[in-house]
Image (cartoon, rainbow, N blue to C red):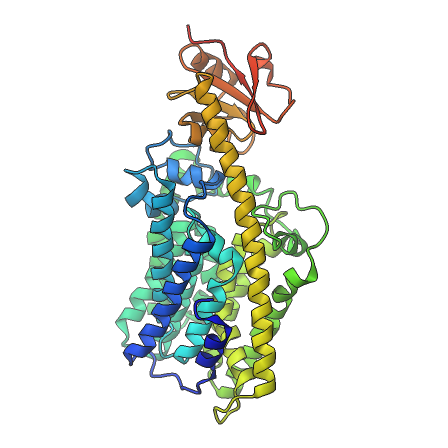
Length: 491
């Protein structure tokens, strides 16, 4: 956490009342949120080292605008928002370190602006604590500096909900209207379906306020226009793209993925299939405490006569989490980032209520218990983050070594790789990637053989794995955790 457990409790402990929505009076208030955002950026740069290589999904997004390798196949569920986000750096530089630093700085700015959208709705101490709670989750720190969409959906959700509540409270706050549209657009630009789930309760609550509803719809439309247009250009229509996206995700329908999400909390970036024992209870305890504190936050808000300020983010967090808890058959911890961001505000408000009495005085026993609990929580988050970073860094270094070995074997750009882990290995090697079946199918056997007549082509398999039929006569070489079957030299 940016200032430690005691600093967060001190910020929450002041009984400073919320100002008029739409105002954010003192420079000190802005400075406190800036300090949290700055600490968040610094923590990313220290704990998630910028030299960590790009992951599988990242190579897909970056390759669309980058110069290191040809664009990888862009499957139906993906949206172009991340590629646009990284373009200012990736379009002219292949430096992963530079890209990570850029994304970490951008993530800090995004968190600051999203928290400021809640100005006047909650005391600044609560907002700072909410930012710190969200920013110190291992999954937030791990994914914020990555070329992935989920953190930015979370920032868009926080911005959209905060501005919507301000617009409801002060109808003449035009900046809030723009913030509603901007938050919705950011979410839709990154993941259109996630945006729809977050906005669903907001539209219901805005049914009698047509201007608010119009701002939400306009934001969604602006953010999703590229995705919808691409559906008609490349997928024979929106319905076909949605159907294909559902198929790739295993078929949307009733799936209880709660236990899968629990298993992923140990630091598994993708849990598909999600097997194995449950993590140690110390790792998952915060996940069960979170809804309890959110419920306490709602009770506090009801008693204080400001129910909507807490109820709306709780509803949006719930709808954001529903598809990833009950509609898909696998898990990734990043899927729930929007829900965690929205829950952070009522949870911080609940903690403030626990540690201070109505007259603003400390409750020493409860404050001590909360401080100890938060310190333990931070320790667990750090351990999980460290292991996730170490494991991920090792995997991506293996891809780098495989790429170097492929270059030594004569597989260098322009070239084509297909088979097991072809997309990331091809990116690191500078090759195109191809698949004749599966979620990323984009070529045929005939096309691969035709390419092999003029360019270096390799088929990747797990160690000792059988090559595809068309590559059984190709020469086999052992890489770092992979076998490559290389076609005879171009004729």
